[in-house]
Length: 471
Image (spheres, rainbow, N blue to C red):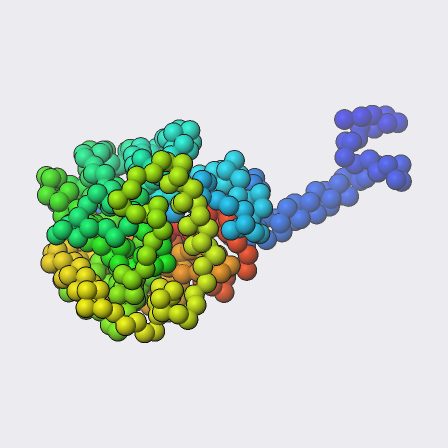
């Protein structure tokens, strides 16, 4: 406050240009104009899915939880939310793969956005893939506990990134876990065709007494949740190997569940590098998978591919050599452009397979069908009812992975069926209800530039989340 000619005035009311002091009405008008300007900016940010209460470097496109309508007699169950998210390993980033991403690629920027996004959606269980080994120790294991999470992490020794599961400590306690190295598994004698270095992680999470006390009006026999997360082989010609990895998943879930006492619902998530019309998706979601012509052609053609020498399973290479090869192949993954030669195209229209190749595929599919485990993608059950713009295969969202050259659905949250069911009877058959889905963007809603991108998404994958109620 300053005093002029015996009158007290506020500094903000002084106009240097005119040398005069504003009247109280003029001051109030200026304040109102500023308030309206801030409100307009806030509304503009909200309309773009951005949070005006966070700094610009932490912004991402916030998506709503789309609630699934249920009838008037809807009975509430134990609430449970599951997220799956490929966070894009920093060690895999090459700027030429993400030409428009700019500073959004830097870890000190991306890490803030990833953490803000996970905190915002606040899932009870987070299943994350492509978590850098070094950043798990320096970042994730330090930051997530600040938001009430406990974590467990696993990676293959020669790989610079792995998978992680985080759960709310107030809700769950870890009973046991299982690490899975796909290359070391040979179910029914079916060996991997190449070195993939892919891993998975299974945990048994028991409900805490505090969680049960909070929901003491809800009756359930459930002891907790068995949940896994996996990152399958990325290679364009890897259909056979991904299908073999799905066989490993099915057998390992049953094996692990057999070691856990109690009634646990079983789920698994991850980046399966497979679309809904692919063979891996089919063998996970059908009790007796039967391949159509396109699927059979694709998997048989993949058996003809010859991988690089450093992927030869009979040779050992140093971690540096493995990472160098991985970097080169990751680069080829992003640069990959389908041709017309069936020998060089992962999904050819035609392929003249040999008897040996047909037998190889038939044996793998038969062994998958032998395992008494069938799962359902939770998004496939009801997402189309809350977001009718999605009419993709199997009622799944259009995409969970984005680049300027290719986009599609590669990530899933699967629920292991207790008994056979149809989409209409899935909830009743499995004693659960789907309460909501995190909205997924369509192709039309994505901008034609690479992700990550400032103010949009911090990874080249889009997080998925499903809210459940368990009975």
